[in-house]
Image (cartoon, rainbow, N blue to C red; front, top):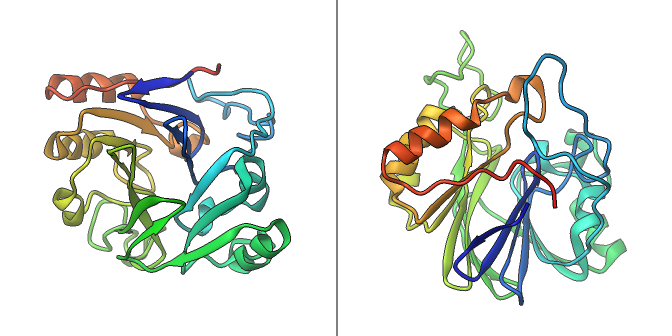
Length: 254
């Protein structure tokens, strides 16, 4: 469904894909993968999920597309949401060959006519008229998502999150990451919280971060897509609301 906040309309389309629009500018985060935009997504076996499942999505209305890391890079998903003159902001570490999803962002942009901007780990730019700052995103090798040998799914330097501003509203999509000290330094109005736990902050850590950020609204995304990303969104919402922070769930389909 569509969430309205100030003059923005926000939708969670599945997995890490969110659409943020103000009537003039439309931004998508990490579009695609796992069938969430092709209409092929099915709930994982054994998981009680309210993840949005809908028909094929092919709006091609996005002015700005933000891609955080290899796991969220999907050329088909980008094509489905990007306008013909879209700007792609892709973390410099994204490698299509390593991800197993060709073509590269450079080839994709050349073929489709997009403007491509590669961005470093902690960099501020303006793209499609939108202020964008990349934010470090990683799992702490000494933290709860580390393996016994210290290896993690998202090592430092593998990906980023984004803070971007649309119509005066500062939005944080942290990407796949633990809650990090850098997040506490950010001015955030709308927090697209990642609550899936096994490969990033869990719902309790995300709720605590929401309390520290003090945004006007929290909307969780990137959960229940697959069994290992399962999360209790209702418990998260209750936790956040109990901390005095407005929260909303978008678990339907228009």
